[in-house]
Figure 1: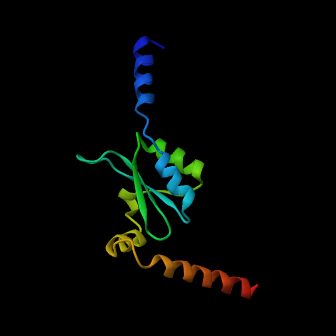
Figure 2: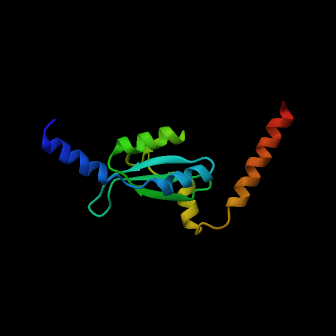
Figure 3: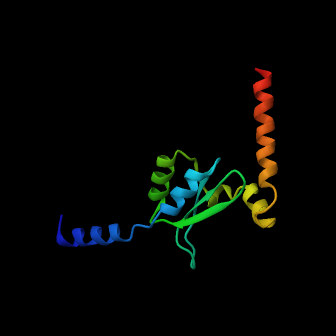
Length: 120
């Protein structure tokens, strides 16, 4: 390995994005899924996390490998937003301004869990 390879690897490592906020988001939420968003002329390649309510958070990544590693470590599914699009719950959450709906979904899930336990 030459000097230029060492130099390049040093600076690539130095530019590693801070995924701490995404780790916190994934750890504190339920039903989180990851979506790789393609790079555009104005935005870097990003990893979008969406929870079961539709709340979301984005973070810049160096490449798809960062997203795959992050999601594997967090045990969350990963999708390509350019291929499958965005989840409807995220669209609905943003449309209603992030407010109402969260408690209603929790109540629906609790009711479903209760019914499943009763049927056993």
